Amino acid sequence: MKNIISTVSKAVIPSKSLEESKKRIAELAFNLVQKEIIKFPEVIGLEFGGSFAKGTWLAKDADIDIFIRFKKNTSDEKFGKISKKIGFNSLKKYSPYVRYSQHPYVEARIKNTKINVVPFYDVEIGEWKSAADRSTFHTKFMNKSLTSKMKNEVRILKTFLKLNGIYGAEIARQGFSGYVSEVLILHFGSFENVIKSISTIKENQVIGKTSKKFETSIVIIDPIDNNRNLAAAISDENIGKFILVCRAFKEKARVDFFKSKKSQISKEYWNNLLVIKFRYKARSSDIIWGQIKRVTSSLSIQLELGGFRVLRSKPHIDQQNEIYLFFFLESTRISPIYSKNGPEFFREDSSKSFISKNLQSSELMWIGNNKKIISLEKRRNTEAVDFMTEFLKKNLQIGIPKGLQADFKRGFKVSTGNKNLSKSIKEAASELISIDDILLYFN
Image (cartoon, rainbow, N blue to C red; front, top):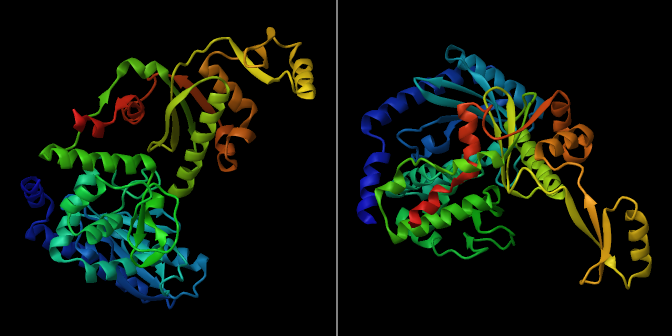
C-alpha cells in the first residue's frame, strides 16, 4: 500500500511552476476584487478561502475562492445585490456569470482557472447567517492544524474519492466534500490510516467529539462546531461506496484505484427504463435539485402503488434546462389483474364494508387461507408509460412538489428505453443498469 501511495502522491502534488502560475492568477483576481470592494461601506474585508487558501488543492482541479466579508448587520437583499455587483464589475473581462448556493455568487474563468467570488457575514462561531460563514473559520483552523505532509495526504484522499465517483458536496452528488477530506486526514493522521479505519467502521460510529446524538450511518463532526454532523450531507449510497472501496484497497492496493473507470452496462435492461422528461424554469441549484429528488421519490411510490416495482431511480439535469427522471423497473408491463387483501372475516363491520364496497367492481371475491376476504381486481393500466402519463395529467397536486407543478403543466414526455436519448443523457441513465464500479474491485 505504501508504494502505491508514494507513486500517487507524485502525481497529485502540484509542481512548483504550477503553484507559481496559480498564485499569479489568484493575485490578479484578488486585486481586481479589492479595487471594487472599497466602493461599498457594507464590505469590510477580503480573503482567500477553500482548498487554494489551505494548500490542499489538486493539480488538475484548482478553483480559487475569494471571500468578501460583509458587516453582520447588512440586509439579506444588499448582501446578494452588492456581492453580485462586485463580482461582475471586478471580473468583467472574463465573462462572469452567477452561480447559486444558499446565496448567489459570481464565477468566472481566468486561464482555465475557475474564480469564485463568495460573500459571507462577519460573525462569531455559532452565529451563522449564511452557509459561507463557516468557510473562513474552516480555512484558519485547517491552516493551523494540518502539517505540510497532511495537506498532501488530503490531496491523495481527494483524488481517491474523485476517481471512485464519490467526491463533491453539491446536492446533485451528495458525496464527500473537500472539507470532509481534510477532517478525515486530520482525525486519522494519513491517507493509509483513513483507509484502514473506514474499512472497519461501525454503523453510527462517531468521528470527532460531540455530546449530541445523530441518526446517520456514520457521524463526522465539524471540528469548529461540535453540534454539526458533516455526514448528514452525504448519501448512504456514497458512504457505502466509500466503506467498500476502502476495504477493497486495504485488501489489495493497486494503482487502478486511482484511475478513471468505464462502467459495465447491462444493455439488455434498457427497455426496463422509464423516462420522464420536462423543462424547468431556471433557479438555484440547491432548490431545483431538492425538488427533483423529492419528485423522484414520490413518483417511485406511485409506480409501486400502481403495481410497477421500482428497482432503482435517479434524476438528471442537462445543460438545456431539461430534467430527466429515470426509473429502472422490474418490468414496464404488468399483469392486468391483481389481488387485494381485505380484513379478516372475524371483523364484522370491516368485512361487511369491504364486501359491499368492492363486490360490484371485483372480478372475483373469496375467503383466503389467511382468514382474509380477497378481491380480484382489474388494473386500469398495464403499461408503465400509460400509467405514468395518466397519473401526471390527473394528479399533479398529489405526486409533484408545489415548486415543480408549473414546470410539469408546461409539458412533459414519458417514454421507455433509450431510442430518443442523446449520448450524454444515455450516459446519465446507464448508471441505473450498470454494475457499480466499486464492486468490481472484489473480483
